Image 1 (cartoon, rainbow, N blue to C red):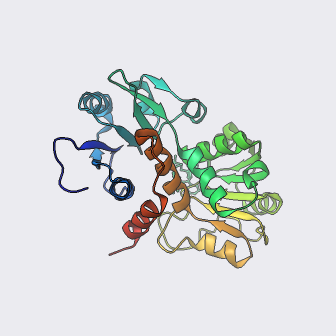
Image 2: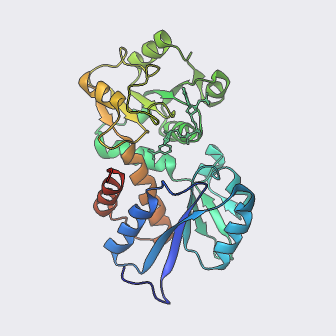
Image 3: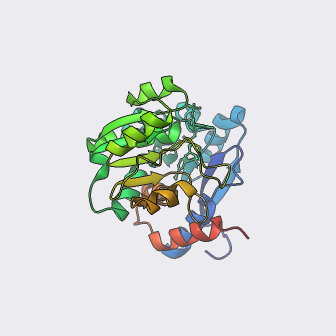
Amino acid sequence: MGAADSHTRFAGILGWPVGHSLSPAMHNAAFAATGLNWTYLAFPVEPERLGEAVRGLAASGCRGLNVTIPHKAAVVEHCSGVSAAVEAIGAANTLIPDGHGGFRADNTDAEGFLRALDEVLADDVAAGEVLLIGAGGAARAVAHAVRSRGGTLRVANRTAARAAELGHAVPFEPAALNDAASRADLVVNASSLGMGSADLPPELPLDGLRPGQAVNDLVYRPGGTPWLAAAAARGARTVDGLGMLLHQGAAAFELWTGRAAPLPAMRDALTAAREPG
Ligand code: NAP
């Protein structure tokens, strides 16, 4: 897009904080690649002002929103309707104008997760045995995605009670995790382990990983995570967290604009934005 003018439409992301988000780079690249006179902004919104922000953006002609931490669950009560995915996951990441002055809530994280797998792997591993590590918001989206494909879910989480809410719980200790990993077609790290440091988190299973198995780390780091590198060294087929980020954004772009998402431009923008410097 060139300079904004009186026809420029806008979309954006609500978060607190939101300065770390890669979504503005990805979506502005998408608008430029498709020649749309749209722009995408990051809105830092305090939790207690979320309803006010949603109403104000709707009243200002906002064409679409993404929602990130800490608003993904709370935003739902400020929307006029919810998709089946939001109902199942209990959180929204995408808001779409409802045609009546408000927004309806959707969630593209599960769809993004599945598209990222399908892009890299020829077989449908989400329909098989899945070991899911973590039980927070990202894990709930993965659990919904696996169920939608008919997969069997085992869940391991530091707080065991949260794992049991999502599926058949596996103890969060090395022997049980490695045993469950060795029997899984797909192992997913949907916990925050590996996010804060470049070191290999000792809690994540390694000995149980085997050649040909699919391993997906939702944590995204420039150059990949040490756990994913260790899984690849054991012969696993690896999928990194950039794929889900890209594809949840592509699905949101399609909902807002009705156009096919320009994946190469969006992927390039994400890769450039996450490289340091
Ligand atoms: P969340 O709702 O805060 O959940 C965090 C999860 O990590 C919980 O299961 C928590 O366990 C676990 N955890 C946190 N610290 C831990 C530790 N020291 N040891 C063991 N477990 C720990 O966060 P989220 O939104 O689900 O995000 C989780 C991760 O996924 C983050 O790294 C995020 O960046 C990534 N993510 C990626 C994408 C993508 O598009 N690639 C999308 C969403 C999220 P407890 O229940 O015990 O607290």
